[in-house]
Image (cartoon, rainbow, N blue to C red; front, side, top):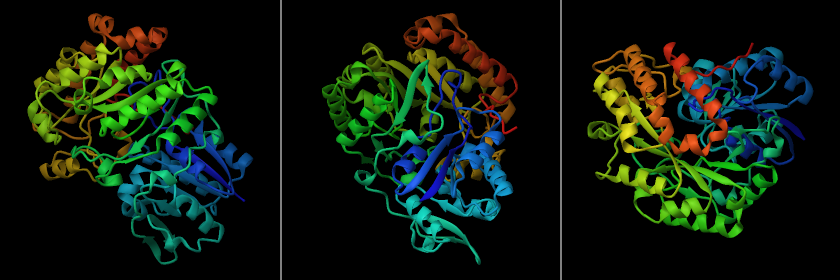
Length: 475
């Protein structure tokens, strides 16, 4: 029986780090789909400090036969640091890398850092990774037959054809019992993640989802979702973030899911957070009320911009008035509305950045998260920015947290973009009227001191030009 150590990287990319720990659901899903293995999941987003000592202890005490590392693009540098430490301590220990970054840039990873990894699992891993474990038990025999896998051979790196998208009905539940750290939190409450669907068919130019799954939308069976919620409740979890790429793509299906949650009674002692589109919420005036009855207490909505030219840059088509309507419907239903906005498009100057921050207040969201346009690998936006010569940091991916400018506009340098965001953010996030009117501050009043500390982090990290930069340490 193989002993498999699964590692989630410590880097965070959230403006709520002071009040939230975001667990990695993917590694728990891998753990739940392994057979005949002893598995341990170490999510390094919890300890964040003295990570070298933690990794050394896991090698000593757990004695893994194989290590799997999951990394988003902004976590890739930490994945390399981790792999380098493992190589130094146990040179023969097989190391497998998966996650978004390697799914998009497998050939680049193999060419530049191929000595750190033995196998790369591209795209979905629930089917491929168990087969990789079995192949490595046989000294690599059979790797060439696994779709969606790249591997190091005597003749160099081999890249197998991509795997087909998985039938979600075949994916077993995540195994969260394998975690070394289990007490994740959001606004002071026990918190975890779940998913009810995968994929999105929208053409947003800045997004990597279609590069990961193509233009597809697949859903889990309702019974499976309810079983997952039952396990979370049994673990003492009282808040669940549905991490679906676009849960509002099919609002009739979402309504049926809400009815199933109501019938099962989960809303009595659990509350839910989800991501939504403006169009999905505005399409049916009854949806917001149903979401609230089913226990949804916070919705993150991708608004992006109130400037028509910027929406065109993002490939967003939005009827006039839909944003205001969607915000109003959610707030009238008693749901906290967090809006996502983006600045730093090619034609942005200081006034257009300030205009976006002013619109955060005007549109009425309870909290606005304003990020800067980031040239994520393999997106249409990156291609256009490269052609325009606007990307200033093409490869230092640890800075790709969404808040640190890695490009210039036709009018502003990266430092000028960062300065404009910081100054406008101070006026927004420290405005007494804005905080007093916000449902976020009222609903989560027990953690108001932590929210104030979070705002202070905005002040300090923004002044250094590294807004919300991850503060983990391997030392």
